[in-house]
Every structure is written in structure tokens, then in C-alpha cells.
Length: 202
Image 1 (spheres, rainbow, N blue to C red):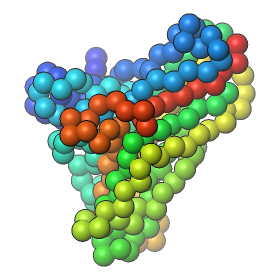
Image 2 (tube, rainbow, N blue to C red):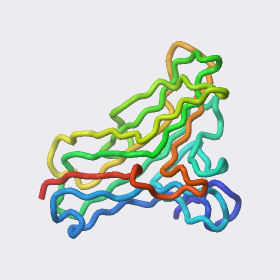
Image 3 (cartoon, rainbow, N blue to C red):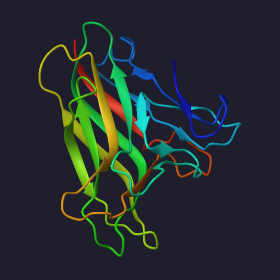
């Protein structure tokens, strides 16, 4: 059963989990295809924000998905990508309109925000890590973020992408606040800068 987070009650404007991004054979007929990502506001009239899994994040702050406890070591969102039988992923590209980093206290810290890849949703390989050195008074904003991963091996019909907090090892109790936006519109939603794109073998 899908879990709904963000606002009390099971209505629109929540984060709905257990949802795959499914590519069809028609979409992949040219060997590549792209699907939009959309994070919406938590307004009751807004569409649901769909993901596979999440921990320690919320839609309660406008048009973004953000961690709820800046001191927590566990906060992430996962998207699962599913291909048709007989298709195998060669490369995946993730685009996000904005990543906001409000991490380090007084500009000092060693926490990061990491984009990671997994074949099983359990074992993760970092694709890109960003030092979380923005502060509450001077946030670091990364616009039109893009990263990609070459996928080795045949028969990869499904995989997972995760973005979330990566705790540093040297500095304790530094804040790790972060947020992602798929659109800078106040209500959120899709934009050309937020997507998952795949290249496949068939």
C-alpha cells in the first residue's frame, strides 16, 4: 500500500510512495527516452508527488521536498525506474531544477548531499556528492543540476536513484539541511530541467 506523507489525511498534496517510473517499449523505440519528475506543493488541491521510497523528508515548505530534521543522519528520496522486458539500461541521467543547501553552521561542516545509484534498492553507489556548506542565512543554490551514470552489465530492467544526506565523519552536530525542487513555480510541478532519461539496449 502506498504511503502518503506531508499533510495529515489521505488527499492530494502529499508524497505518495511505492510508485515506479515505467518506460514503455513505444517510448524506448529510438533507444532513449525521458520522463519528467514533479515535486508539488503540499496544498490540498495540488497533485500528489510520486516516489518509490523516502525517509526524513517533507513537502511542508512550499514547492520543495526537504529534510525535516537538520540534525538527522537519515533523509532521502528514492525513484525507481522500470523498463519493459527485454530492455537493458546503458545510461541514466538525472536532472533537477534546483538543489538548496542550508547545511553547515557558520559555514563549517563536512556533510554532503549525494546522488546514488542501486540495482536492488539496498546497495548504493555514489554518482555525485556535493558539499553541504550553505548556511541558514546564506543558502547555496545549485540550479539546473544534471548528473549521469553509465550502467555496466546486461539485463538491467530496473534500477533506483536516490538523493539525500551523506553524513560526514569528522564534524559532529553540524546541520545537514537540504531541499530539492523540480520547478521554481510556487506550486512546484514539472519543468524542462527536472527529468530522468535512459539509454537502453534492446
